[in-house]
Length: 299
Image (cartoon, rainbow, N blue to C red; front, top):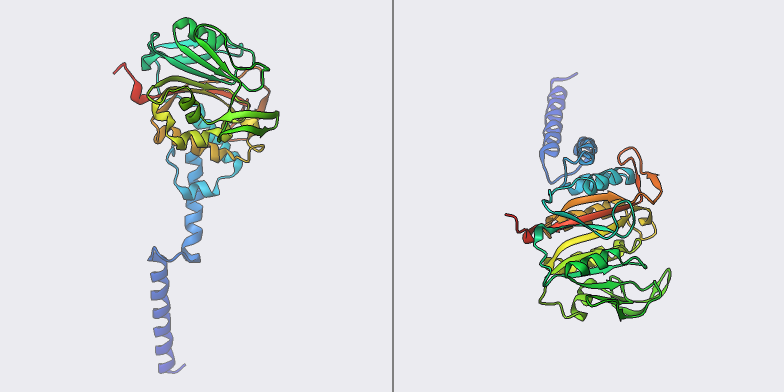
């Protein structure tokens, strides 16, 4: 091998090494030299996410989570209470009977001026009646129980309207044609634009998946003290949602609107489902109670 050949070969190798080092250290270049190590690191991070160590999960981690891993993340979020209520009361039938809901009085619910929205009641008035007895004005909604608009009692007003993500007098629903309104439109209909709403409770058999994005984007929650709703996990596919989609909604509720989960309960009357190795077995109906921390009155 000639001296000149060796020289050019050494020069070529030096240049090649320099190029490779440039590619490996330039953050703007995402070649094969950087992709595989980053992917492996990201895959490892999802374990931390499932264990609740990543409530602010980065988008790269989210992009590789499987549905079962997403269920683990969602279940961790809705089974971990963040606020310890000092005055927890049950309104309606006691657990395990259906129809009752837990409310946290730490937000200062004044019986002389409180307002409660009870959406999705079927024919179970226990929650509504208890709040009326407490002194609140209660507004009850259900488009499927066969009742028309009426005044049930001095403090309970009933409307045959469903909660939806849009306003429509002839909305097509899997159970039939209904009149539906957004939460903000209900508030305007009742002339409550200048009022804080003490409790918004809805149990709408899966339609919460369709309504929650609109509720979160409307700004109405800034005037809501307590939010109670039932999450129907078995309806995710029906509404085109992934577990990660719902987790993002919960994260938005907490981080952008200041709500904290203070009570959760699994509906004992519903079938248990195995949601995989990261989530485990749970009822498909989870009753969740959130408190708007800006209304706390206990310091």
